[in-house]
Amino acid sequence: MIAIVAGTNRPGSNSRKVAQQVVEFYSEAGVVTELIDLANWGLQASWRS
Image 1 (spheres, helix red, strand yellow):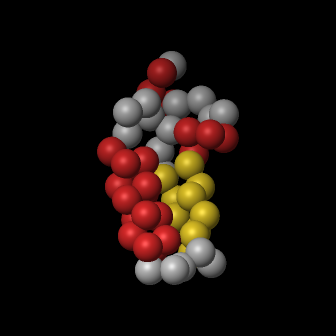
Image 2: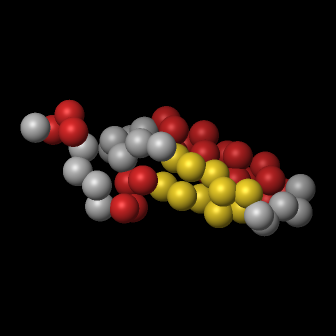
């Protein structure tokens, strides 16, 4: 299994879009993946002080 990390919790992040494309690429090749998206972890963005 390969873990793919979307490493930001900013809304509308391009990181999330790229991570999803990587997951789809590996899935089509028959590789098991897990998408770890920091936006789903309930973390508060530090830039929103």
